[in-house]
Length: 97
Image 1 (cartoon, rainbow, N blue to C red):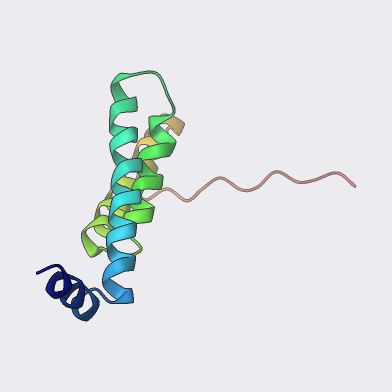
Image 2 (image 1 turned 180 degrees about the horizontal axis):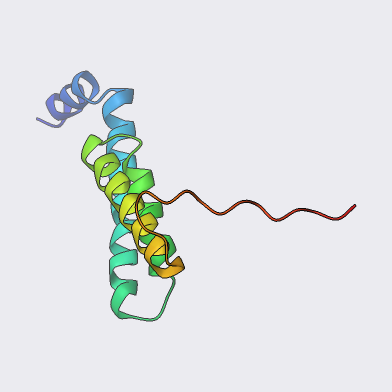
C-alpha cells in the first residue's frame, strides 16, 4: 500500500503543483498574520498587501483583490490630500542647484 501512495504522489505532484502549494501556504500565512494585525498591534497596512502579492504569484483572485486594494488606497489618499477624481496631481517642487 505504501508503495502505491508514493508512486501516485510522484505521478501527480509536479513542480507546478508543488510551487502552487508552497505559494499558497506562505502567502496564506502572511495574509492571515496581516488580518490578525488589524486587531492586534502591528503593521497590517503593510503585511496584508504583502500576503496578497505573494498569493498573486499563483492565483488570479489575489491579483484582483490587490488591484482593488490599491485603487481604494489611492482613492483614500486623494481624499485625504483634498483632490477629486479628475484633478491632476500637483506639480513637483523645483529643486535648487
